[in-house]
Length: 222
Image (tube, rainbow, N blue to C red):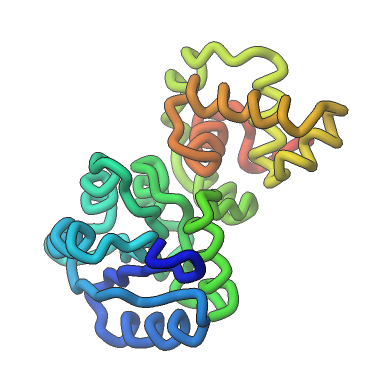
């Protein structure tokens, strides 16, 4: 982070009005500093190398280099920033592809300001911005196509249980209570799920669980 208390953010959106609004929202929080802006994904690598942001707020649809391509490029770098993608529409295949590429979550551009600030702090802390209902709705709109990924993951029965509860939005502590396990044991199971499914974080694992049919996005169960 830019300091012990401040999260550095890079704003990437081809609409100046959106960038201006986001800057105003974020800079109202004393724990966030907007380090710079970009109007296209092509500008992102250079700005990230120079500014070293903790979080990149990335529009998924841009005219030259879109947010998915820019996210993939960023996450191939050593020690990449966290990425939050921005979208106008919740039912957007681009968002699903960005989450699969490794974005830590997504926000609608109509998200209330306090939730935008909270989301930035959440992903900067290394956590996934996981809104289970929103992810379910997003994934349910597209054909299942992650079947091989989950089928070949070799999850144990317990790891499968843990993944289903993660997909319902439960925290490690809540999963521990649900399964009558220690929190550290749950963390071990979550780490195994991420490793076996090739997921960077909980968000990617949940997308894979829903889009493979491992968990039915229409009828999530606990």
